[in-house]
Length: 156
Image (cartoon, rainbow, N blue to C red; front, side, top):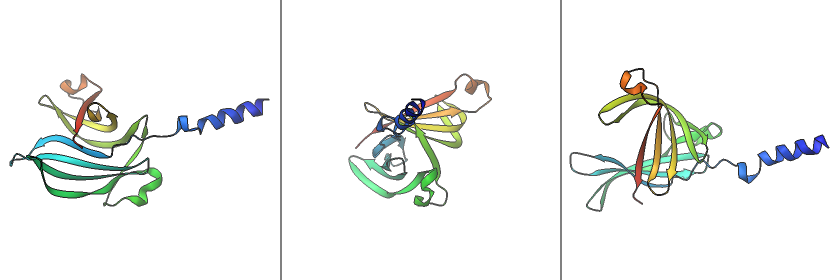
């Protein structure tokens, strides 16, 4: 009887209810950045499940698209590193309904820049692509919070 229970428990771990989703980020998102010509920077994301995520970009002004950079695979899972189309891809892992990856950089909010060391992406169907930056900055202004969230609005 114990063997049957163990088999049922292990089997439930591999059921679709426990399957990784890694989100579905395919679409175009505004970064909120406007260049000196008044063009808005748009990211184009193309995702292949939990295998890879390709990123491209273009500029948008007055409903005109210019300077299109086709998506290239820049994010991969640990098992699919061979899909990488650039020199150094970022390796991601499933994080609930999205993905998470290690990355170091600076994120600015309300005029304060803080260092971060990890990022999570998830979708907010009403707003767009949520980016959560986990702060690793000892300065007093940055120590007040554990993470900072930004949302890129879906445009297409």
